[in-house]
Image (tube, rainbow over all chains, first blue to last red; front, side, top):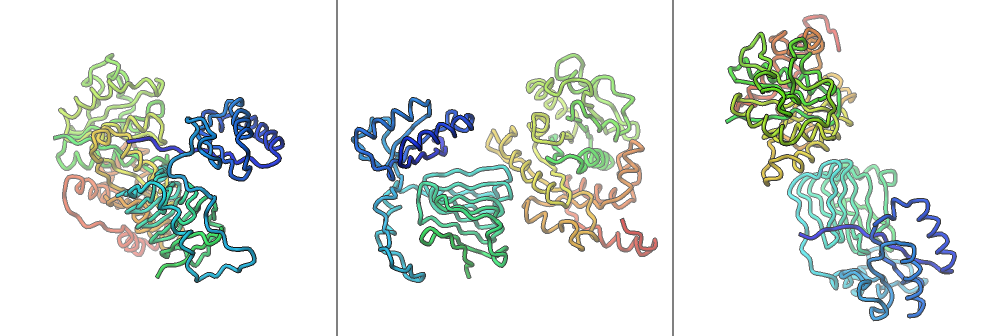
Length: 231
Length: 271
């Protein structure tokens, strides 16, 4: 058995100097949060040159932050210890609808959109055969999580892929935590505290009351979470 | 083969100690050899409810540390000779109970009794973990209200993670005992209904103990309710629960029917 953990992603923004000042301020304010927390540096939006990449990494590391991987730049720019995490779905290359085109609800997403997750590791789903109790966390970054039973209030499920609950979902569900926008959350009885897909979340206040107690699925539709009843 | 039970709940004030005493006495009345063990070091109460507070000489920690023999610490009940109490220490630090000493005590108790009932302190700290450590089965005490149910859920999760049985890859048998149940209030939506509790916790039901002033009265007299007033509704409910533990297959009554009937006879007094 390996150990699963969640890494915190740092995504620098331009201008970089301002971002560093902001980072310093946050690190100072929450030392315990950053102490020994594994960090992933996502440079996708900065798009630096090779020399800049080396410089940015040096800036981060001299702050004694525990960088474990860098993403968004070519592999050969990085020292081996900071290679991107395997199985990570890169946001670049995902199908983007042409500007000005209205999203059509019923149209199935193009194939390019569908392919992305399957490029990662073909891991089996995690099957949990009992109720998940308050205070328990099921963390499985490698794929789907299937719960045969209920997820209690105060429990959480964190999955790289989709989450399937054959029972009542009363706790919190985090699907697609590796950036998988195709992840979904299914439950036979919906009474959740929070639903998250790829970082986009809805809390109980945002849920349609009519859905409570019914069987639902949640999915992302162009960065908006839709929770709909399943017949 | 002796069975070690832990009576636990997470939340305080739901009736762990009352239920430990009542079930212990009910099992003893049914001819079983029973010891009730108080794990609430520093805040012991079981001795009071058992009416043995003036007879405590040595306690659990004395025995665990080897300063007293188990026989010296065990207090035989004056009413039932096959019922005994192992009291907790009131003065010692709650960390004074060692794992090794406890394992030795439980092992010895298993040879002396049919049932070892451990009364857990509230919370999920070390004391509660020690109480559940050696349990073969757990009785989870829940009041029909949301905070109690959630705390019970948390404790059930810990039973599958922190016990000796869990470490061996086995499961701890679990029973749910709903206490302080008031059907009239449940129907009015002021309390969770039995089915709601069962749905949330998904643990088999051992019994439903109705809310009753008999319970408080018995506690204050230093008597388990099953001895103080065996014909009262809570005493009968505890007795049924004890017989279910022994393997009897009894239908579980929601205490409402009786309650309403009594209410009608005695002029509709509502709790």
